[in-house]
Length: 225
Ligand SMILES: [Ca+2]
Ligand SMILES: [Ca+2]
Ligand SMILES: [Ca+2]
Image 1 (tube, helix red, strand yellow):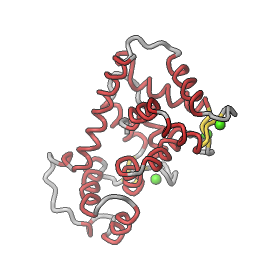
Image 2 (image 1 turned 30 degrees about the horizontal axis):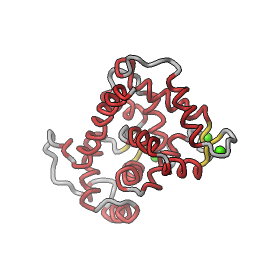
Image 3 (image 1 turned 180 degrees about the vertical axis):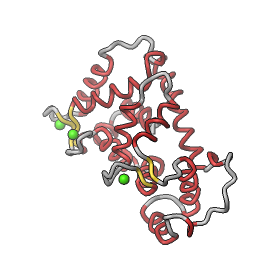
Image 4 (image 1 turned 90 degrees about the vertical axis):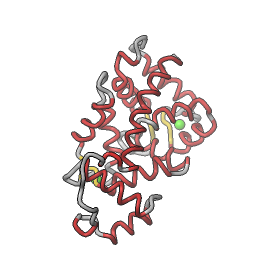
């Protein structure tokens, strides 16, 4: 299992690196764009100021991020298909479409079917710069598929299956079909403290903070983003 975990971690690190490069703006290296002019794009300086207040990025970082975003998605918004395409490049051996779908829903905070630059930087700010509580809140929201404020076993199983699907059989050669279910059972035993069958945000945060193993697993999943 630790062997699998290592391989899986290596795969996930690739994605983390992608976002890091994205953040640093090096994805624009192959395009010699004109000087970045805020006035020519839909986000005018005052909205950049607002974004700076609402996120943990500096104005310079926001400009670099915007440039990268615009380069990857010339239309200025990302739809679910773009998301799926990006993820399929990182996980060619598996089927990442379901996980990409869940992640897309977590990023699309205003639920209008697309991830705007604002949606993107709000999410990224939490994932990269947020406090542990912020990050755990974000993860909880990702796992709470129907966004009703608690995570059921079914929701966690759906997420877990999507992650296993994404990793593919080659990444997990010895994987049993019931591995996701076992994973969920052990998560639930630790997290569902009052044993009422659902995990609330309070239970989630408390359990994650107390449990070294969960924190490590969480980190594993964090890297997917
Ligand atoms: Ca949106
Ligand atoms: Ca739920
Ligand atoms: Ca509970």
